[in-house]
Amino acid sequence: MLGSFRTLLVAVLVSVCCSEAQGHTIITRLSDGRILSLPELAAATSSSQVVLIGESHEEAYHHELQLDLLRLLDAAKRPIAIGLEMMQSDWQKELDGWVAGNLAEAEMQQAFERNWSGWQMYRDIFLFARDNRIPMVALNVPLAIVRKVSRDGFAALTAEQRKGLPPGTSCDLANHQIAFLKKTFQSAAHHQQNARKFDFFCEAQTVRNSGMAANIIRYRDKEPGRTMIVLTGVWHAVKYAVPDQLQRLGGAVASTVILPETPYLNSSNAGTSEADYLVEL
Image (cartoon, rainbow, N blue to C red; front, side):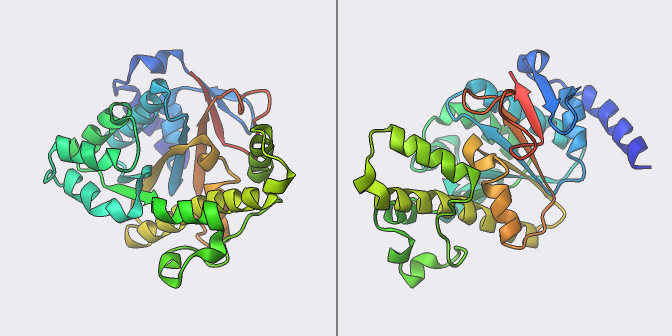
């Protein structure tokens, strides 16, 4: 029965027109090396509660891939919400106003640019969500908190600032992502005397991952019938980042990770511990 449903779903999705980027993508299922089409990839996420689509923020074709997948999932009449690293959680009302049609584009752009940069990269995704009344969810931890942790450590946060964050957030040096961050930090001419600064930097990254995971779980608790499509940077989408935090927080969330190839994560070094699907564009 499930196989028949997926076959029908693929047939429906194939009829949906996507960007020109679709014709140049190579999508690899990392569990067995099988090459999939974009509609097949969309159909393969049918049992997932959370789908993380990684990006390099300044690569336009990564956003085209995200929009193509959103179109395919929406065309299949699948209830979805769009989770955004680009918006801090205390800006949720602006996203709600946008999706409801109560916020002009100039106002939404201004709100976005107070959170992030590169509105034009994300504009089509925002328009698609508004035009189709797809909820958008602000996932990121408020910037003031991230900056304070990066400067003074998680322990410096007040009780008020810790509200909404998982307790005991700390730098997990057993995590592959942290090992990568440490190498990057050291290569930037930081030396031994900055070891404590690295710990704080590491804690700040963990706060962002755990905070986004907590916000995903909160939304899913309110809207269990919707699949959340999370748009975030590759190093937050990778399995040992936000997905790992989802499991640590007891979310019991069935997630799928889709990553584009980057110079640091590609077919030569990525496996199922990093992602479920790798997309070469």
